[in-house]
Image (cartoon, rainbow, N blue to C red; front, side, top):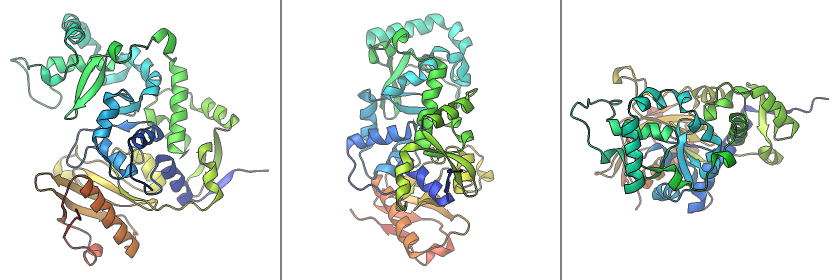
Amino acid sequence: MNTTLSLSLQQARHLHLAAQGLLRAPSKRARYPDLLAAIRRMSLLQIDTIHVVARSPYLVLFSRLGSYPPVWLEQALAQGELFEYWAHEACFIPREDYRLLRHRMLEPERLGWKYNAQWVRDHQQEIADLLQHIAEQGPVRAADFASGADHKSGWWAWKPHKRHLENLFSAGELMVSERRNFQRVYDLRSRLLPEWQDALHALSEADAQREMLRNSARSLGIFRAAWLPDYYRLRRVALKPHLEEAQRTGEIVPVTVADLGEMWLHRDLLPLLDAPLNATHSAILSPFDPVVWDRRRALELFQFDYRLECYTPEAKRQHGYFVLPVLHRGVIKARLDARMQRQARRLVVKNLWLEADVRVTAAFVRDIRQAISRFAAWQNAESVLFEQMPAALRAHWPSEWALNS
C-alpha cells in the first residue's frame, strides 16, 4: 500500500517558509537569543556588502525577527558565537559548525578563486611576517596597510596585504574576530579557537558533507533531491546513499507535491500537518535570503523568476540595481527596487512590480504597506517616497507617506 503523503503546492511553500522562520509574523519583540536561533534555523547567513538599503545579513534577520538592533550581529561575531567562512558563499555560521567547514580550510586549493596558491608561494616571507605582526601586535584590518606605489585601482585589484589576509582566511590560519563599519578584523585562529585541535576535532570530508546535507534538509524543510547540495555548495557528493540512510532512520519522509512531483519532507515539520497551515507573514526579502538564493529553486517552488541585476549594465536591467522580493502570506507577489536616503531619512522606492495574476485585495494593500513601512522605520526612515508604482496601487497609496515615530 502506498502511504506517501500528498501535498498541495501551497502546503509545500508553507512548510518551507515554516522551516525558514517566515511563515508567521514574530509574536513578540526580538531578544538577542532570537538572533542566534534564527541563524541556526537557517544554518547559514550569507554576507554581502551592498548597502543601498540595509546590508543583506541584517535584512535577512529583520525579515524573520522584526525590528532588532543590528549591533546584535556584530556582538555575536565578536563574542565568538558565530564565525565567518565560505559555505553557500561567504557566510556567518554558528560556532558549533566550525567542524563542518574545517576540511575546506585544510585544502584551500580546492576553493577556486578564493585561494591563490601561487600567490602564497611567491610571498611566503611577507605572509610569515604578517602572521608574526598579528601574533605580536594583535588583530588587523586590510585598511591598516598602505597600498604600494604601483597599486592599480579596480574591484579586484587588491593591495598585497589584502591578498595575504584573504588567502590566510581561506586557509583557516586567520579568522574574522569582529567587524568594524562592516570591515573584517582578522586575528589568529589559534587565539580565537585555542581549544581546537585537528587531530581531535576535525571531521573527514565525507562526514562533514553528511552533516551539511542534514543541516540543509532541516533548513529547507521540504526539498527535491537536486536542491540539497547547493545550500553549502557541495560538489561530488554521494547524495543517493545519504537520502536512503536519512529515509531509513526516519529523518526525512517521501512526499508528492502537486506540480512538483516527488520530494522529501524533514521529520521536524510532520507535526505541522496535523492542522491547517496558514501563512500570515509579509516581508521584504534580501536577494541573498535562503528562500531565493537558489534561483532555480525559487522558480520551481514559488514560480518566481528572479535574477539580481546589480552586476548587469544599467541599460540591460529589466527591473533595477538591487531588487527585493516581496513575500505576502506564503507567496512571493511583488518585487521592489529601493534605496535608503540616510541623511534625508527617507526610503525611496524607485519602482514596485507585481507578479503575474496577483490580485490587489484590501489585505494585500494593507499588509504590503505595513511591510514597507516597517522595513523603512527599522532603517530610521521618517518617510517613504514612491517614484513609480503599479497603476493598480495608485488608487490605494499616496506617492509619499510619513512614518509614525
